[in-house]
Length: 67
Image (cartoon, rainbow, N blue to C red; front, side, top):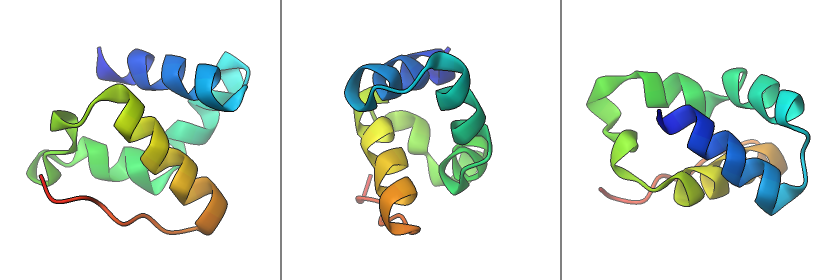
């Protein structure tokens, strides 16, 4: 349920087409970390996760805020 909301946020905020957003998200470190239950990234809002995704895409790194 969270992934479609993140993709929707990515599309709205960064003007990506849905298939592009999905593809980039699934290949990202953010998605890898989101799948890991121990990171608790699912606590963040879809918009916050989309911002982290954009950070990764533009800088190549992600600095996670403390949960």
